[in-house]
Length: 91
Image (cartoon, rainbow, N blue to C red; front, side):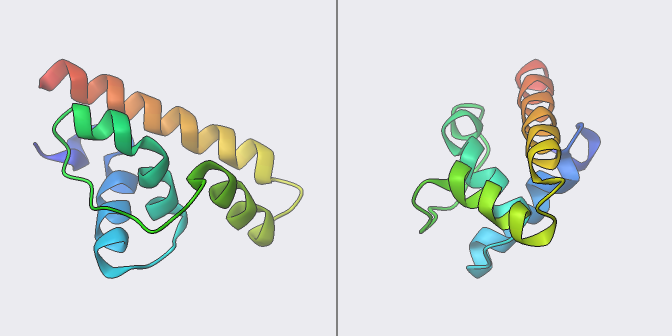
């Protein structure tokens, strides 16, 4: 599956790459949040060392921009869901 063709696919690809490298990035945390569903869809998501990825993602965003963290978090989750729905259609 070519993730780049799906909405949010660029985030998913970067997140998987970062997880493989052990980097705790916004994208890696987003993929960690979506790991259960992504795995069901056949996306190979590496194991991650992150406990509570949802909380870690929010904290990560808060460190970057405390005022915009909530909006950014919700936007990223929407992109993840859009990717999952599109991936489901092409599986």
